Amino acid sequence: MVALQDEITSEDKRSFMEQLPEINATETFCFDCHPGVPCFNQCCAELTLPLTPYDVMRLCRHLSIQSQDFMTTYTTQQIDTETGFAMHTLKMNKEPGEPCPFVSPAGCMVYDDRPGACRAYPLGRGTKMGLEGIVERYFLVREEHCHGFDEGTYRTPAEWFANEDLIPYNDSNDRYMRLLSLVKASGKPLDARLQGMSRLCLFHLSQFRLMIEKMRIFAHLDLSETRKTLIMESSLEGDSACLDFAMDWMELVIFGKAERLKRT
Ligand code: SF4
Ligand code: SF4
Image 1 (cartoon, protein in one colour):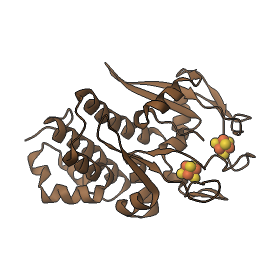
Image 2 (cartoon, rainbow, N blue to C red):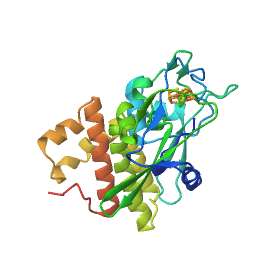
Image 3 (cartoon, rainbow, N blue to C red):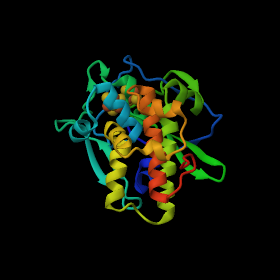
Image 4 (cartoon, rainbow, N blue to C red):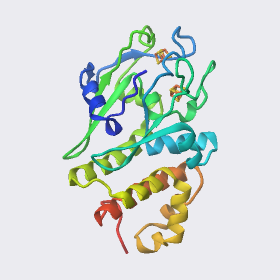
């Protein structure tokens, strides 16, 4: 499996994606993956699998694990030199064949909360900021060992994303990409202090909530009571709202203003 998510991948991978066959939004492709395919599980190994903040949040919830422990056990980190943001990838197991730590003979053990790149496969989604918002392009990955194309259901990219429950992943990742794009366009990568804060806010939501309380952040912002309550709630909806707020907060801290956040 080739894990492709344009917004959080390197220039190398972006140019690799450009070489793949592109399909348009109304075009359909035939694909289904299920335990009956002869290649079942073969693709869940030797991956460079990028993890976005939303992926990390979902996996931590699924595994009931603290984000610090998750990061140490399951990820490698490097700093993106253009933006200064930390980029995380899922560590493969150090054993022959380098399997994903979450693959089992019965399939993916974190299936309901598997990363966006696993859900999107075999479709690569290229995104960039256009004048009227996000512009999407779609690329199809056809690997020799993959029998998912042999038979299945014909779907458009939008139907495939809905089928794989990718919409909340794409929404959060698009917000993340917007933040990265703004920093990249500024030509000023995050300094050490902002790097530390972005790591805490985007990848360690329980610590971010403690920071919200300690710094009385809500007291300085024009936020509805409903949003404040949801941000502090420990649930999937609460964590999603907290991450969404973390991205607004980082935009405000970095640039002194944020499109979706007003000071009181
Ligand atoms: S997270 Fe699940 S779907 Fe993704 S590579 Fe690992 S086992 Fe496969
Ligand atoms: S059909 Fe493709 S995606 Fe599914 S298990 Fe086989 S190689 Fe992986």
